[in-house]
Length: 262
Image 1 (cartoon, rainbow, N blue to C red):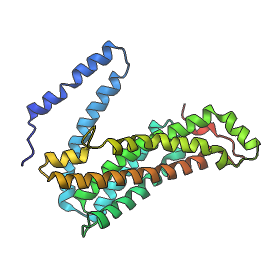
Image 2 (cartoon, rainbow, N blue to C red):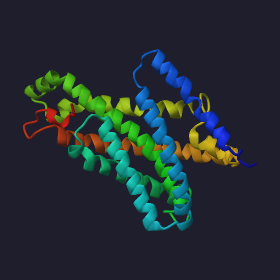
Image 3 (cartoon, rainbow, N blue to C red):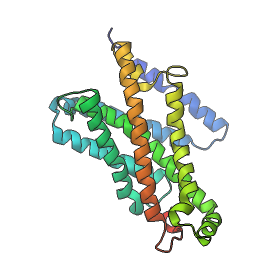
Image 4 (tube, rainbow, N blue to C red):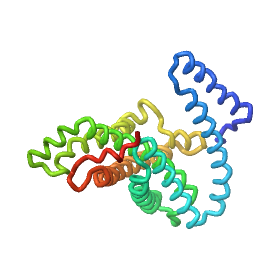
């Protein structure tokens, strides 16, 4: 079964759905029309360019280019994550990059070597799309984890100081905030796994079925991918919060508010 083609007129019809959304936002005075229009415009331009140059990347299938491209994806994910977490870029960019890079590369290597069992574990048409799906979920989880953690520390700073005064170590005093940040960040992934197939058909499975793949194979890929995404997201969050504690507190265990961006 061939994938139905989307013509230019069909694409234009799809983009027209932005207009009623813009009108609703304007009518209800929700105040994010500028972000909506800018975001939609950037999405169209960026994905159009991605579609063009991925054709050549897939044809070249160079190990060095594939690794470099994935590294670039991780960098921009880290950049976006810090900006959306309202933290100082210089203080957290490197740590966030590493917290995303190592789990992503490890899981991709594991997936390609032991699950898909392909000879070239750096194969472009497997590594880049699956890496992108992992990074999209890691990005969301890390933003939620960082925001939750620092919001709780800022709001409950007196509780934190009290726990320190009663003899708790920094890690012991921060444990309630740490656990809540991890639980909050991982809740969407847990819900997604629990409701997959009942509430929705996940993205990769839907794409493969539309592309003509056997539904049974699509299900296998989706199950494996969701497990990989959950594992990668959890490890990335734990590394991210470890670095957050290192950066967010001084040598006397006091919360350093300068890490927060006004």
